View 1 (cartoon, rainbow, N blue to C red):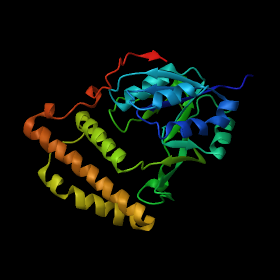
View 2 (view 1 turned 45 degrees about the vertical axis):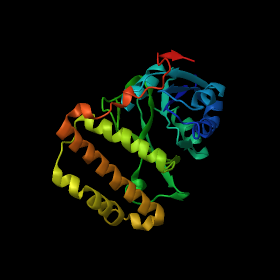
View 3 (view 1 turned 90 degrees about the horizontal axis):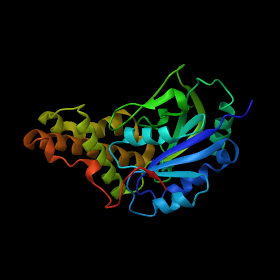
View 4 (view 1 turned 30 degrees about the vertical axis):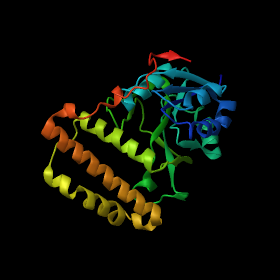
Length: 275
């Protein structure tokens, strides 16, 4: 029986500082079980496209950004392997994980796997505030999976038994600088509001920053991670505050006052085409 093939699926935008290393980290699985790396670009204006085109295993597609679930489903729909591994540009496949992926592909064809993610910030592995339990679903049979319809914090729905855990680590470099983080906060909070999960509450707006910082830094032990823990708790509190300010703006001026992320185009033709 032939060894099942794997498609690595990535969605990217302006990731020239991360993409080459992410693709390189797939080298061992590309040499054994990965038949392709499907990269969906949602409007890069830097060197991301050139980096993707230069990699021999990449099949590159351009697709306008609507939301994260749409972009990731677009990549999944174009995958041709029997199995799919989902990878972000700021993540790296460790050597141990590559071996585990290869081993799992010969197992049950209805299995799916969560992967222990090792999160790094300012050169330190984060071990508190929930990072220690971070294990997203990343490896699954292609025909049994789909992304849900959430605009942000999307999930993967897989038919079959409950996902098993692969303990070999996936390295995640979660903080790429303050400018990148604030752009991410701007995008994520707008999508979260459009998703309709929360509504304006003035008291929540007043107290969300100090309460979020206290919950993460003290309640979830962020102080044990030193300055990176302090910084992460602070940035998380800022993100919650920005979200609540946008909710207040939408409450006062109407939802049209918020910019729609998918209208921030690059000025290029965003038609769906392999390149």
